[in-house]
Image (cartoon, rainbow, N blue to C red; front, side):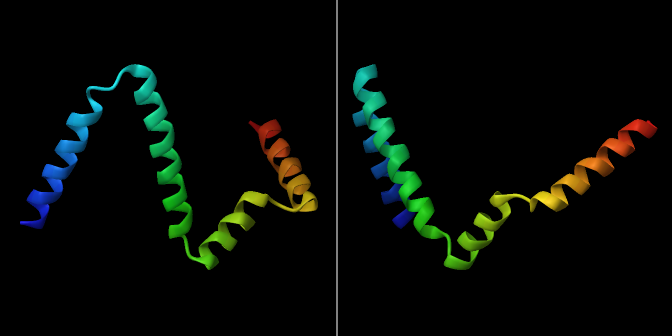
Length: 78
C-alpha cells in the first residue's frame, strides 16, 4: 500500500512540473540537482570520505615518476 501512495505522489509531482515552461523547469532542475548532491554528500561515512580524498590526491611524485618511466619503457618495447 505504501508503494502505491509513493507512486501516486511521484505522479502528482510529475504532472505539476510537466506544465512548467522551459525556464522554470531549468530553475527547478538546478535546485533538484543541488538537493541530490547535498543528500549524496551527507550519505558517505567519514572513513569513506577520507579514503576517497586519498584516492583523488593521486600518487606521490616519486612514485608517479617511476611509474611514468616504466610505462615509457614498456611502450618502447612494443
